[in-house]
Amino acid sequence: MRHRMHAEQGFTLLEVMVAMVVMGLIAISLWSATSQTAKARDIVENTQEQQHHVRTAFAMIARDLSSAFLSMHRAHVDPTHDTVFVGTDGGSSDRLDFAAFSHTRRFFNVKESDQTEISYYLEDSVAVPGAKDLVRRASPNLDEKATEGGRVLVLLHDVEELDFEYYDATAQEWKTEWDTTQFTGEGSILPYQIRVRLVASERLGQQMFQRADERRRSVTYGTQFGIPMRQAIWFKPYIPGPTIPVN
Image (tube, rainbow, N blue to C red; front, side, top):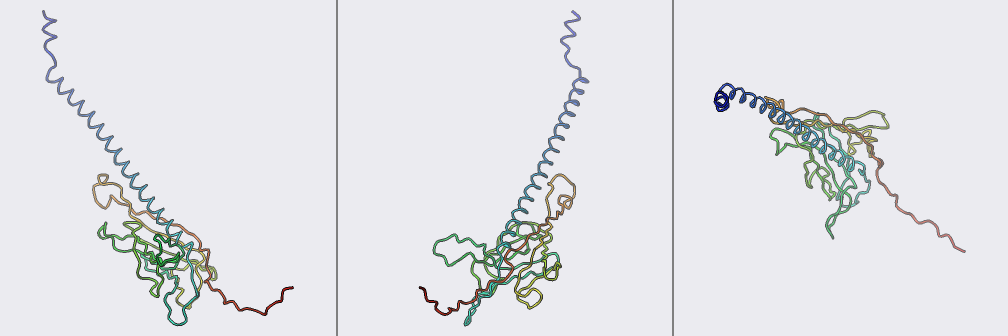
């Protein structure tokens, strides 16, 4: 009779409370582990996405500069276009304008060629208030205003610094500016190599830190490459010589 009454008593209140505490501790541990894993995943994804955008921007800059050129050809009566290579030192916000053979004609019968005007610079961001974006301006029509017109494409958001340096092979030194429109040491020649450095802000996640300024960090990226066609294009006119009789 005693054994039957003892089996029908069930759990005491203390046993139920201990079981609930244990289950709560297990749930908190699982939630903490899952939360930390999600935060680490967000950081890795944000870092990979940022690096992908930076690599894409550097690849586009390298592609454009590898086909940069200068041309000495001008119309004698009415000049319609000019080719320049102007690198302006703006402190933490440099600008580069040049002509290149990197345009792809996408429409039939359009009056375009592979020549294009290219610009790289920073402008105020629309997506991130108070920040800057790295943009690429491209105009397939060469004109006398080599730094204006065309379409602007955003390559990278939230860029803090953009810096260009140009190597002068004659002086054997790096310069912060290069201007082929001025009769200085550059004249009508392109730099031997170009060094690009940018500082971008990388997001670390929304819940990882308490303060908003701790959710981002500044990362510096850089690359360097040469320009194959440094001399200006200039074809001498053909002057026919004396006729040589053929036997």
